[in-house]
Amino acid sequence: MTTRERRSLAWPELLAGIVFLGASVLLLYESTREYFPRVEWRTFDSSRAESLDANRRAAHELELFSELSQWNRPSRRYPTIAGVGEREKRWRQLADDGLELAHIALQVLQPDGGFVYPLDKPMNRLLTLAERGNLGAMCLMTGLVAQVKRSGLSAEHFEMAQKWLSRGADLGHSECKLQLGRRLILGTNGATRDPARGLALELEARRDGYGHDVDGLVSYFQQRWSTERSNLTQLYCWLAVDAQSRLTDGPQNMLRLLRVEAWRLDSGSLLQFANQLASSQPSLQACVRLSTS
Image (cartoon, rainbow, N blue to C red; front, side, top):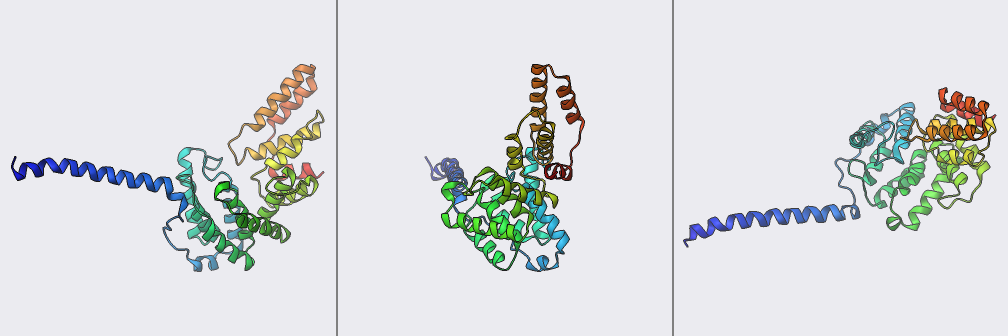
């Protein structure tokens, strides 16, 4: 066999080796990428943050927080699987417009791949912002900590988030009030259960237009389930608000249960009431008024 023939036979083997090595490196990267900080596609332009007016900042924060608990799955705003990638693009737009919280969120969460990256650097930045009086940063700590696997969460980060969540709620940020109130109603995430205080905090946040993450309120009114129309109306109202941000059939399930109960009791009035609920279109502020009356 000539040297040229031996070389021609070696090329396919060499190419196959290169492909195998490349595939192995990619596989290793994909399996370990969450152990390393996310590679930043750009640095944050602080000058944009300085030029972002208060009203626009508040609107951007509300949009970010309303999607945070659904960051890697479809929502009412992004109802398809492809929409998860659209969420990442939108968060980048918020960051480009001057919302540093969106930039920090993307350092931890990658919506279009479902990856969660280490908290250390982002939490340090949030701590710096919180110490400077940034209320949104105080609330975002808890939002990011909630998405990290328990194995990747340090006690320091958990305690930091708890401390600043309470501080942000005391200073009046709606997201902090919402999340603290939710925890007090449910008795989760280290909070001692206090439904009365939790309800008050939740409703304050809802008055400010924060309509997401209503599972605490739904749980509160589910525990008051009865044939009393006022209780049923409040529960249906919050289920309907929940369906405005999450892809859920909670309102339909409640109506189904009511109709089954009406048929069991042979109650025409209860069936009529269920139909009235079905034809209603509750708003967030209507639910707040119902729950404070």
